[in-house]
Image 1 (spheres, rainbow, N blue to C red):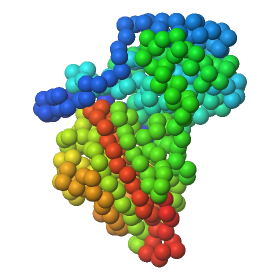
Image 2 (image 1 turned 90 degrees about the vertical axis):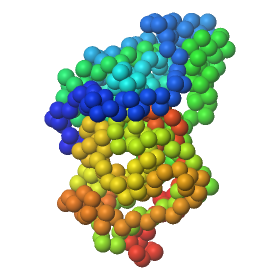
Image 3 (image 1 turned 135 degrees about the vertical axis):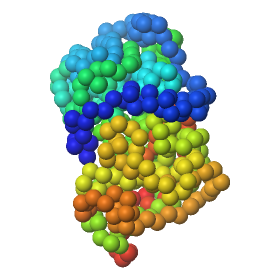
Image 4 (image 1 turned 180 degrees about the vertical axis):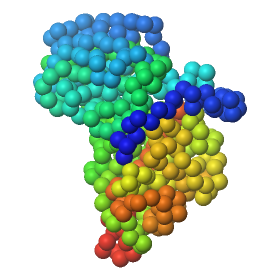
Length: 394
């Protein structure tokens, strides 16, 4: 998959600037959702968190570690204090990560922030607050990535100089707990929530997001509660987030291999065509093949049904193809049944050497226009014509 992308010299900024030259910038005017986390002057967010921490007991709760990440911060170079395996750490984040200021394109800091312990598993809160459980002993290492990791180890797929040319600032605080974080955050929010984040962090600690059973998150994106399973359905609600759930299937790409699903889309995260970077917010279901390619079946706001296009995002444009399965708003709020012959689609659209369908994905993207997308899936299955060959996924 994306590990094959090392050495590709793509400039995200130049790609985005090209959109302005094409006149897309004016077409997007006013589309971005103005709602955003409060912006603080440098140091004010940290001061607000530290004040609540000190008044709630300070060192009796654990250790506090402020940090700042900017575009010139190298991946994983910033180290926070050491933790023990099983120790819990809450991250509280402020700031914006800009793709292009001229188009008001930016991500919330929780989307791009990542942490790990001594090279262990990466943690991404997805939201601007979240609590990580250390999977080993050692210092906490932090970094940021706007979908720039090539693999689960946190290596870059692109050149370091392009990574360091990014435009953004994350001001954050890590609290390394010696008490239950639910207790510590409750004590802190009781002192006042000048940062406007402690109540949310406490609620998330009390009611943590759980990845649906049998599925796992793409390594570029953490568990943010976008997908939730229950009563025979998979619910998706995304707002200023990106989530990709994956499930292993490992099936031969036979001529009768088919993906079936029912879905009801209640709200589209985009109001315009999603084939350009500033508007690339969508809901879809995809299949990943053993040649590293994936084909994703999306519901578009405006692109005609049946249209095929490569993902416009740098890096992803090497591996991901979109097919518009449904389009427009007329059928929103209705349950619809879909069926795709995967061998035929792969042959006609991708035409590579794949022999297996490795995984099924569910995708919910709403980071660019920062709107809300909502849908539900049921009856998701993959397999051959014979009923006994089919894998029931939802």
